[in-house]
Length: 120
View (cartoon, one colour):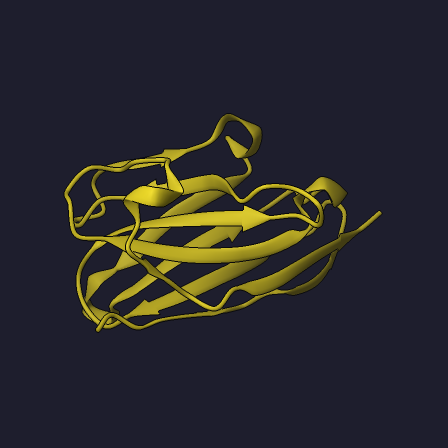
């Protein structure tokens, strides 16, 4: 059983920053997704096992950075220049395959989510 625990969400002002963390019970390809009220869950960023390969979706490119510390089994999502439209519940997810993928169905394991609210 794979356990994922997110932390770091909260309230930020537009233009501010937050860093999300996700502790996993092993080494996996990881992704961050988000779901805003009334919208479908969407892919935000992904990172491979070693951390050498990353991918972020266009809407957050240049503002969000994904990284990992395998010694701590932790994946981070650094979110800068936050916008009100970034408000959502953020989920980390894990998959056993080596490739970064953007489809929810390709991730087997999910955290409980952490709320991020950005005020204007």
